[in-house]
Length: 230
Image 1 (cartoon, rainbow, N blue to C red):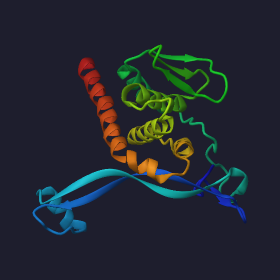
Image 2: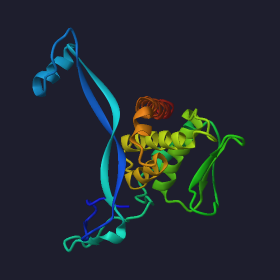
Image 3: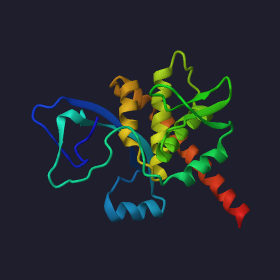
């Protein structure tokens, strides 16, 4: 699946596929009965404590297209890789930070099929596909660490909720640290949700709170490492 901002146009009569993507939201709550205001005055009131800024997660419905229904625009001689593999080789530091916080061993092995990795609760280990690029490996490790650290769903009966929750958290964490996983995250989340927006909304607060915890865990460990090496 592909959006329309990858140096490509859409052919006539394409098959439109709709998916839901997570987006960060901010809501202004007035204190002492004052009305919400925008712009400079809102910022000033936020700083002096007369309004409260509440952050959350929502979902937006967007259209994507099968790559066969698109074409390369003439002005775009080069375009990004349009599959579900990440490969910019710029996330080694984040990957190493994730290894530091993992409570279980992280192994790289040959895995048959399309599966890129898994967390084994029984064996208490995370396994990543050996052939993955650095970015892909990092993205998959974020996902599997979320299963390991924060996933409290009953996997046999609530697998769809588990996967929606984990990949949404993983997307927000990766995005915070500058790793864009949207090319694979959005389709993955939508597939498990079966296009049911209620599944997203019911989990939105849990996703946001968990993503914040995960980010802080990574940042705090990085701070500890800096103190040790100083």
